[in-house]
Amino acid sequence: MGFTLLKIAVAVAAGFVFLKVGMAVLGSFARPVPPPPDPGELRRVRLTYECAICSTTVRMTMANDEVPEPPRHCMDDMVLVTSPDDI
Ligand SMILES: [Zn+2]
Image (cartoon, rainbow, N blue to C red; front, top):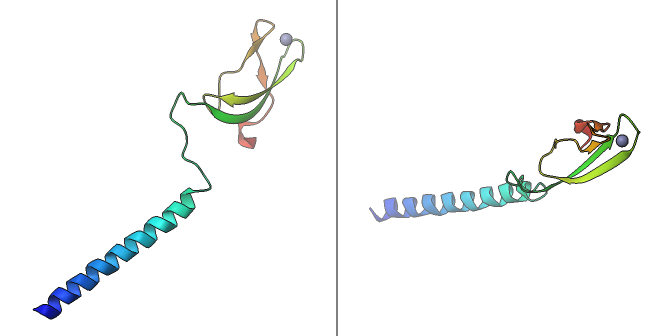
């Protein structure tokens, strides 16, 4: 009976250790890539827009989305000249 209790204790302890190690591994994986911010939160982007009419070019560095609405210039939407894949 005592032997069975010991086995259970060892199993529980081993399970706890595996859980801890698993958490540590997951934590180290999660560290370099921060979780995406909630919708509405600003995120860093590197998008370049060009005005199709006067060729004014702007660089967007912060947006509320990875693919935000283009800014307007000369009363028209600016053209995204950076591929969203390059972000
Ligand atoms: Zn313009």
